[in-house]
Amino acid sequence: MKKTMLALLATLMLAACGASEPTLDTSSDAALDRSVQAVQAGLNESEQEAFAEAFTLIMLAGLSQSLQGMMEDGNAEADLDVYMQRTLDGLTGKEVIELGGKLRQQMRAD
Image (tube, rainbow, N blue to C red; front, side):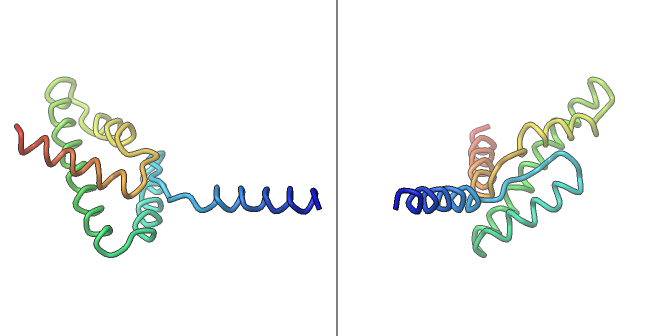
């Protein structure tokens, strides 16, 4: 009986770990593309729209920062890659939506 309960508990724990939300992987352009698709697939229709808007806003914020970096050191692409890795890597779709909302509020306050 104990072995059966332990096996059941282990199975439930593994299932719970596997049920986690997909996250963004910014390790490469291809990985980011795949992970964006996986994240969007786990969202309902209204969340998908909110995710797309938030992702675009985050990208625009990164582009703005990279342009500032280009004026300072001339390497906008590297600055944008670093921004994207620091900002998006490991985030779920809902976390991206939340971050986009915070950026929107910050922009309205400025």
